[in-house]
Image (cartoon, rainbow, N blue to C red; front, side):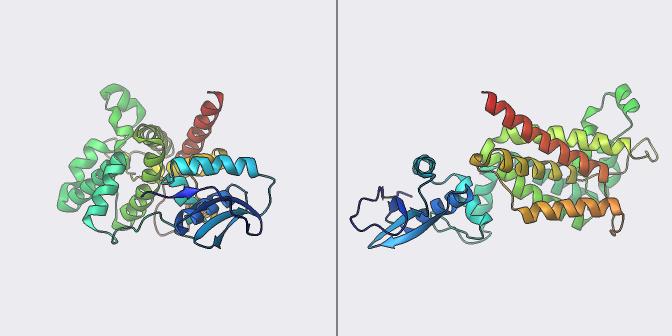
Length: 301
C-alpha cells in the first residue's frame, strides 16, 4: 500500500506537539499506538483532510522523530500491529482478506514455513496414532534413559516427544500457542532463530522431564507434547518484549499471567490431566535465557 506522508506545516496547529501528518487514518493510528507503547503518549487529531499524530508533550520529541522515520521506512513491520493489538485496537494498513480462507492459510504458511512444518508433523503423528499406529510411532520417538541413548545413539529422541500428543485437547492447546508465538518469532527474527529456540527448548525440556520420570516397559518414558517448546517460545517473546521492545516482539501481561498460573496449577496437582511440570519449567527457563543471550549479544555488537 502506498502512503502519502508529509510533515505537518500548517498554520493552525492542533493542541499538543504535531509530529507528522498522513492523508489516511489507519497509519496515523498505527504510529500513535506504537509511540504510546514506547511511553511516548500520542494521539491522532484530524485537521482538514489530514490525520496528524500529536505528542502530548515535547520531552521525547527527538526520540519520537526517530521512531516516525523508522515507521515511514517500514510501516508494515509486525511490531506496529502488535502494539495495536496490545492496546486492544486492531489497526491495519490495508483491508484484510476474508477470515480463514485457503489463500490466507497458504500465505501465512509461506511466511512462517518452520512453524507450519512443526504444526503439520504434530497433526500427522496424532492422526496416525488415532489410526492405530501409536505403538510403532512411540517406539521410535519417545524418550529413553540417557544410558540407553549413549549406547544406541538415537539422539533424535531428545526431540521426538515434542511431536507426540495424547488427546485432542492436548494437541489443540499446544498447536494454537505454537502457531501464534512460533510464527511471531519466525516472521520477526527469521526461521533460523525459531529453529534454534525449538531445538534447544525441546532438548532441554525433554531431558529435564526424563530426569524426574520413571521409564516404563521397553525403557521408554511415557510423556510427550509440544508444551515444553510452547513455554519456551512464550518466555522468549515475553523477555524480548521486556529487554528489546523495539524489535517488535511482545506479549500482553494477561497472556503471560495465564501461562504462569497454568504452570503453578500443574505443580499443585489439582488438574484433570497429568502435567509434565519439569518440561514446562525447563522450557520456560530456556526460552527466557535464549532471549537474554540474544539481547546481550546484540547489545555488544
